[in-house]
Length: 180
Length: 419
Image (cartoon, helix red, strand yellow):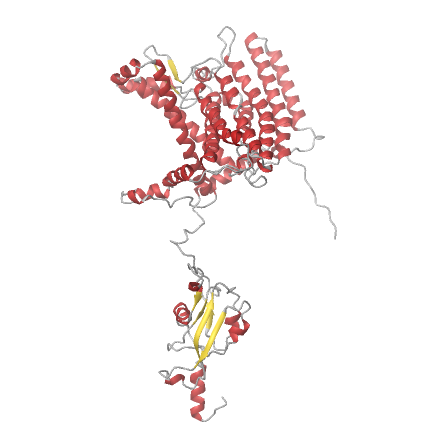
């Protein structure tokens, strides 16, 4: 609905303009003595709030086991095609994960392509990939900007797990309920 | 100390003049550079930032307490200077080379020449007279300052035109129009001061030292600074000074938002640095003139002239009244005031946004100029009534006319707000 904006004529002090400038100078003088609002970044790092979407990482479960099963859903969903997974066997030295059919042989995320959208984290059925609080990635070459599997686990660390999905599967299988 | 004075007196007058001149330039040039650092720091603090605080040459890093200087950004000054001296001095292919190279020089010359007629301090000689510290104690004083400092605009016009590029050209045109507009109000605003100083029977003078002398007389009216006697003149002068020195809110000639960099868009390295230092030198000379005319020059406080302070010092110890000590003291007071004015320039810069060009013109011609003329007429009439002792009836008539004129200018409901 159309309405008329009332435009008040200027008061005398506004027309004289100088009192207004003096008022403004009072404000700036106050700011001169206020503490700084900036962080001195490389020395002081900002606190990262929970839910921050930083660099995507691979995480391990609390028992230190790999969670990724190389299903490649993240690779398929990734809009800029930054993720490249080479599927492989679960290594023989992990007997408690032998019933997990696959594990990633190689897992590369090209950080020059990544757009930090978080779709990989959302699509992952194993809760193995998370965008965590690393926000600063630099390198001198293109190759340096590709995070390989070792780097991804190093960045990711261990996150708490509520399900222990594959342990439950194994227990159910042993109880004789293969379709748990 | 007497040995120094004797050595100095034994020098050839020409040599003395050269040394004095070099000393003044040797102070003003680095002060101009230092102002750029202060500007960065003040702007940062006003915006809630720490400002430049990183640079630290590795060969002094071991000195204890050096980190305080580092936090204050002192070494950024050296870094900036070094950068400007040693970076590539590019010369665009499309410029008029002669005038392009001439412009920064033309910018520096008036900035450093005007200082000759500006007294920087004073000392009291054996006879008890106050002798100003000045390079050329000429009677035309202020006229010389105005005449030479207006030449500064030629640098801007030359730079704008010789760059052969549209933004510098626009900057140069704006600078010339703006300086012409505000020169008038500025000159008119100081005439009442000299009407007041040149009392009938005295010798006529335009000397700035005389203006300070006039503000250091005994008595209530004698010791009063001119800011209290003629505040309107002081405000008009100050606003015109902002416009003359191309400082915000009047930096139409630079206008980095609309004109890229204005007249110095095509300049780089030390050529740009010269413009920069010239701007600050102009500010310093302008502030110096403002302080001499309206803020009592080297007198520490209103009604406390320098000679009174010298008397107090003499009561403590006669050594302290030595001309060198008193000279340094007055110089310190004066330079302190000038530096405070520089701070005010920066303070205003980060408070008031830039005017539009039409607002600048409107303010210059429709507000400041009538105000300056009215102010001049008022003081001319008041001084005439005072000197001729015409009586109360004339004072009353002057008051009525003043109130009526003020009302006509500021309260006229038919007039649209200009700004």
